[in-house]
Image (cartoon, rainbow, N blue to C red; front, side, top):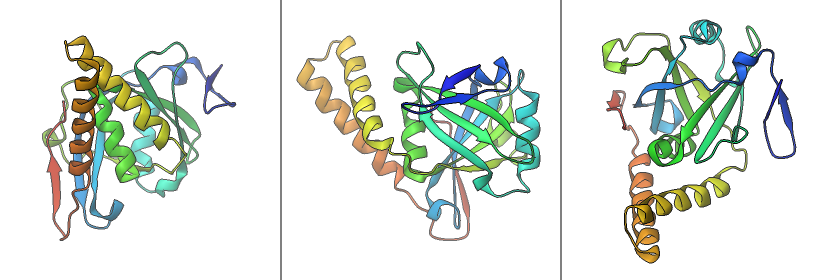
Length: 205
């Protein structure tokens, strides 16, 4: 089995389960001095009910460097209004996972991930929140520059404007409001911790 890993390429999976997007059960944002230059880094709580191998990888990966995961942005076949982040864990065991984001509802997460150049992932289940158990194992994944930003900028603006038009805005008004919304998101993403405290932001949705 294979999925589109990047334009013009294919990424082979070890099992059909690896090709099923892992649901996002919750999210938060964490800012810590020394991580991503103190920027807000999104934390994704993943519903791993069907991926115990991923839960185990997150647990043991705390002892390895963040560079032990290869990432690539893209989309699943026949998936509309969504983007996907493909992950390949290199050690201690090789496995693959895909996280899918609804552009309108979860675009803020993609934007913050791209701004920070990183994200945390944590195993969990629906209803879990970071404040429920902040000491659960977390893994930081460095999101290397892949050339995706220009494509995302156009995709995000178009999706938000289309959503606003469906709510009754004119074409020109929808584009203006979408541009202002995205600008505000980026201003918020530019927050940085300047001391040694850790700050946790609430769930985005």
